[in-house]
Length: 442
Image (cartoon, rainbow, N blue to C red; front, top):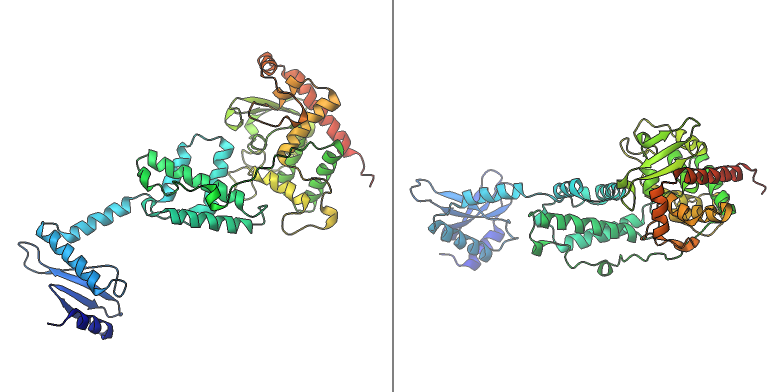
């Protein structure tokens, strides 16, 4: 009887035979099978009660990933199961079937997105980001096989890769932070749905600070002067004319300047939500699902606004159609990218004469500028402005000095002073149209 050291030496030295398998007896019913292709698999030979012929049970992984000592441990565990009347192959088959039925991350994500109580714009944003950064990367993995290290590594990859993306500004921190939020919510959904134990949630204890993706929110609030609004309008138009911005992208910024709407209210606009009027203007009935406050809202779109929207040739239900997907609108991030374009921070960088020479601003700053313009140019009552922009307690954008008053605002909302609001939207639209139509004196 060979010692284990001798058997180990024999296993290492034995070469495969391309014509037949080679079996090396290791003792107690364990042997090593060398296949024709050269793989070496430890195999236990056993016979079930009332069974005439012996069967082989292959252990994984192959040698040398599993040593002779480890193979013997697996072999003896198998022998104990046989004594208890357990059929190892049947057990293995049941385990494989159970493994096949385990949901993947993509399957759980699909279920989460179908049930998530999120605002429409946020849900669409999450779906788009998941599809781009997660679905084809770790989405195919079984949910139970994903651990904390997988999540941490993937979020870091997202940060690095998105930082190189020409559509993004910065180092990828924001995108990575949002992906972390999406993954956290999907795993919490899996726990609540009984697909994962709470203790097995791989996102537990993982913080943005730990990953170095803590977002630093810019607390500076901008109100653009009228000359800056005109310059912005003209640069956006120029970038569109030269093919640096798609028509829907440019139009979204123009509509933001004219109406003071939030990003999700603009990009989600659908044709059947527009109540067209005889003079060519329209009333946009914004559904509550697209509103920050969760309440239906009405916005007047002047004829000048509608001319901008009608120029966008679209066969979809959306007023601002995506150029990539026929069944989707542009993403609200598209508006940020339009602004980045005129500031020259997107690749490829445009010529210097194409870059706007004013301090940086965000889409939300256009909303503040609309409010400020109404107040300064037309002396619009503050409650009316609040009602026009559906300004709520959580907006935290009082830099225009509106002095939010919930009581007064409620009075105007209840009274439904839409005709008065319509008048101010029209005056502001005429004012901007007049300013941007004047020749550039530079």
